[in-house]
Amino acid sequence: MKPFLSVIALAMLALSGAAQAQQYPTRNVTMVVPFAAGGPTDTVARVVAQAMGKPMGQTVIVENKPSAGGILAPEQVKNARPDGYTILIHHIGMATIPTLYRQLRFNPLTDFEYIGLINEVPMTIVAKPAMPAKDFKEFLAYIKANKDKVTYANAGIGAASHLCGMLFMNAIQTDFLTVPYKGTGPAMNDLLGGQVDFMCDQTTSTTSQIKGGKIKVYGVTSAKRVPSLPDIPTLQEQGLKGADVGIWHGLYAPKGTPKPVLDKLVSSLQAALREPDVQQRFTDLGAVTFPPDKQTPAALQAHLKSEIDKWAPLIKKAGQYAD
Ligand code: ASP
Image (cartoon, rainbow, N blue to C red; front, side, top):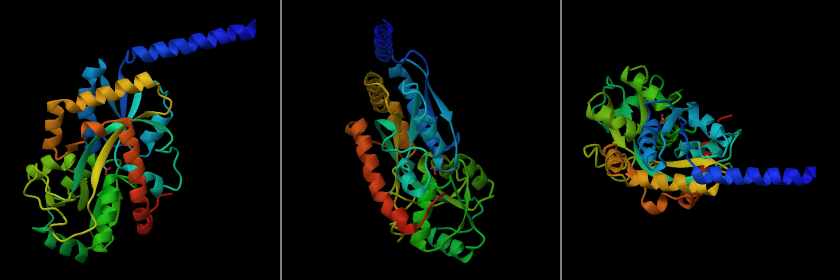
């Protein structure tokens, strides 16, 4: 009798789980952001979360879980209930972290369900307002001459700003003292205040400061100039090879999230990215929205895998690790 009852209880539980998945979402959804509020990842998250609210029929709340390198948020989402109410936005760090960290408490390739790719954003080499250099050539001469004094801000090992800094320092064969933050939002505040000398950060955060003349800018990391910042030359144009990097963003859910829930998240992301307001906002910030065929679980999974394979040898060559 008892085993029979427990079979019925289990079957009822499964049925109610399935019914809940069909009705999803019945309350707010939380999108966890791995870096501080006010930074570039946060900016992308807020645009996407707000736009997903309409097709989801529920508010998508942004929750910042900042840490150097953005390594705590994925762990939090990995350990969340796989019911669609906690999702993760992350950038290229999901592909560089596995090589950079000897000890990591999540695996980007096995601990998540994939929702889709969002957009790609170039980075800019920017400096404090009082940086004396007028152009990239002078900037290089200045930081090399003052290499024991100048400081480079980043968002910790595994951050996009860390990756860009690593490529930049390798390309110019000069190392600088690095000051890590829990996101480049707070790093930007210190750059504006002149407490740190320079950094490499996404256009999603630097565009308004550059346009407002609040910081110095010496180049963009994309192969072509960014339409929203047409006067800023690329690093390549200025003779620097090997520091090109585009920061892509993707949306993830914990492993085991039911298929109907994932389907709703995928279609809501796609609807959000179709919104003309969202596309315009991204364009204004120098970001390029991935085409619809990339806004899918399969495309994110494939991109993540190919990016892990792409960056692993470069990181190993640079000999950079966190413990
Ligand atoms: N731009 C940061 C990074 O370097 C992240 C952030 O603060 O959004 O990854």
